[in-house]
Length: 484
Ligand SMILES: Cc1cc2nc3c(=O)[nH]c(=O)nc-3n(C[C@H](O)[C@H](O)[C@H](O)COP(=O)(O)OP(=O)(O)OC[C@H]3O[C@@H](n4cnc5c(N)ncnc54)[C@H](O)[C@@H]3O)c2cc1C
Image 1 (cartoon, rainbow, N blue to C red):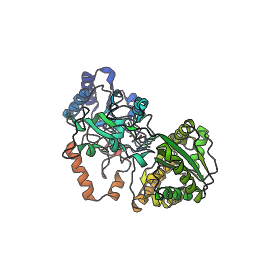
Image 2 (cartoon, rainbow, N blue to C red):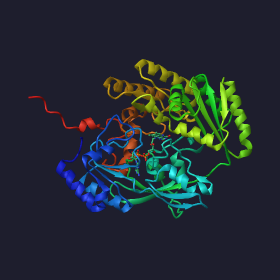
Image 3 (cartoon, rainbow, N blue to C red):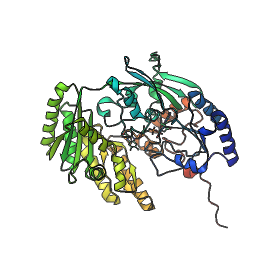
């Protein structure tokens, strides 16, 4: 284990944490800490020295002050679904879990706002307000597990980002415990006070990957549920035709609320797992969802069908009921879960290319798959040009692990070369630190570090992430004694 603490220091830390929180809110047994040794990026692992499960902002502030006094790293944690290792306790430290701060505190229907604790699961917000005809728009595919605090920290998106934007567009303000323990509110306050003068510090913190403090309560914007949906499934012989359809739909001035693509390999895995009725021999399928006033939807749907047909769609199906629509989305959102049918391990990549370059990047992914001899299914937010190649490997074979990492890097470097980016929504974490140097200049990176220092001058809040040259777990691991 890589740790900044000796065993004695660790016991003393746990004792003091228990004094603040009580025994049932502190985890420090080595076997229990293993649960927290990574997030959904499993290529690197290291357990923290302790995990705390506070119930109030004041408790978090006290824990943060203690850690500041002892110079121990702190790592905020939601549900641990990050796909980029943004939770890794690289040198140990104290994980501050928001799992027990998960309530919807109040709903203001008139002003379309809700105040929630940061550990509130994304989908619970919509569940709490849907009887008022409202919902919370950002819908990561992990939304039945991930928390609003994690969404804010990662500025998460989802299938409906194309029309409704990402988390920052739906968060009005939040409470945050800064790395010295001070509690501040940034942005619009729950009593409606508009904090819009001066710098947008709310905006600066959103997407900080847990490096600026611990978010404890969030004021979210709710939007009115549309009058109706039309959900179509286009079935294509190949990825090129489906990609061209994506560009043509947007060029026709139609903005679907979701435009998602799945290639043959992932469709086969999903079909085996969930039995929806996807054709197993289709090269790609496209989910196109339209929403808005019921009156115009039929006309738009007809236009989408025409565009699909112009691009040689084999068939276009329209969901006939709300149940059919829900089943289709269940398949899409559980796509990563179906990968277990194909491979024991997979590496989820998250690059972005201009939409018009989707056919080219998909060809590059196929060539990369051949080059490394690894299968790479794709399921992604095609409307945003946000690709998710899933590089399949078996961690029991070190050579496959090495190839999977290299294949992922090749694809992301290609995204940069094509004018895109190394992340659309999953963040940098430890996974893509080195690629940041390829995407940004030294001056850009220094400007980002300067902003970070404003919030966390001592680099104790979720350290060793995002910036190229940051240390890795192996740099801190005890060196093996040379044989005598
Ligand atoms: C199957 C699957 C599908 C996914 N689909 C999507 C998708 O469609 N779109 C998308 O954007 N992402 C997706 N993700 C990635 C992930 O779910 C998101 O990044 C999500 O926002 C993480 O939330 P979390 O609560 O799990 O945060 P965690 O994984 O616990 O933490 C993520 C980061 O946020 C920080 N953090 C967490 N809580 C707080 C807090 N209260 N205060 C400060 N910092 C905090 C952590 O320190 C860490 O850096 C998916 C992941 C999986 C496993």
